[in-house]
Length: 135
Image (tube, rainbow, N blue to C red; front, side):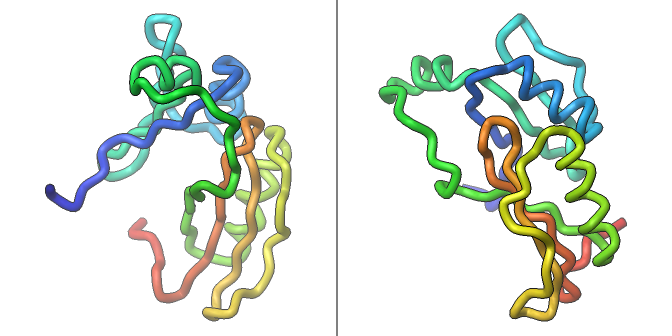
């Protein structure tokens, strides 16, 4: 297997609400809900984010539908400055996210905070001086 991820799919209970959060709130580019069932968002580096109903993911995978856990995984968004962390956290909050942990100085010399999208997926927004994004 090559060390590559091309698509991250988030299972959601309310597809329209989730699409609105990512498209209108976080301003990620999408063509909207495709075939009434899934939405794709373009990310940098060819990566895509998909939103798909949890029931559909359960059916397609053959796994039983279970209760979601917001600590099963975390998506991280690295930015170029502390001010950008604060700006993204405020953008997420204004779009309907729940701030789980306010941005703060970290043990590794960075600055980060956590929010949950309306479907309770956990995101970290971080400025890490050892891991600056390529602009």
